[in-house]
Image (tube, rainbow, N blue to C red):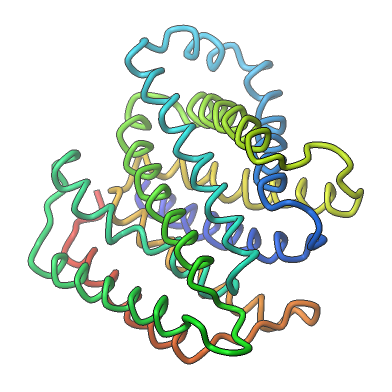
Length: 296
């Protein structure tokens, strides 16, 4: 089962790497919050038939305890927050910086899972966290106010906030997935996240209609690839691997996303030297953050 879970993690990361590319391929006039809402809305719709036609899943959802449902509600809100911050960050910073910073959550997941989930944290992990924080500082402040650079301070901060939300999302998922099946978990969390994003869009006056056909098609594609084959497969793996290990697997996302953003002609974003240096230091730190943790 361990090898199957690791293979699933790799597929999920490769699929999730397409999200940033699809987002920046949408029309610039399309609100990023609108994209976030429809991404989660379409992902929920894609899962709904599985829930409706599977009696076991329906029965499981009915039997979920109140305390568990409250936690699922909170996780759904955290997921909505993650998408709102991260997808919006792509309007103000490069794909490379955004995805590197949003996947730097092992810096948070390691310490928090040590105290909440009793997943042991070693001296290597602590050193890795400090190194990763150094890399984040270099990436964020190094890119600040560089003339002609697509990276902005505000965009990078949004990506960091998205990463913090992602960290808590992973920790919550690791705890809940031990007792709730993947489709029950995904359906409830995605549906609740969609509702949260609906009200976020209303609050910030992000349009929920009038979206171009091309953009709607792209968002649906993102929901299918990054949502179903990315997030949902990732959620499945959380039952079998530690939160810190699952978190570090997502380091593949910035690598693939950066390569895609460089190679695709209509995007062709070249990462700055501070993004490359800071990102490399973050990767080294996250490797140490998860070193010596058993894959259980």
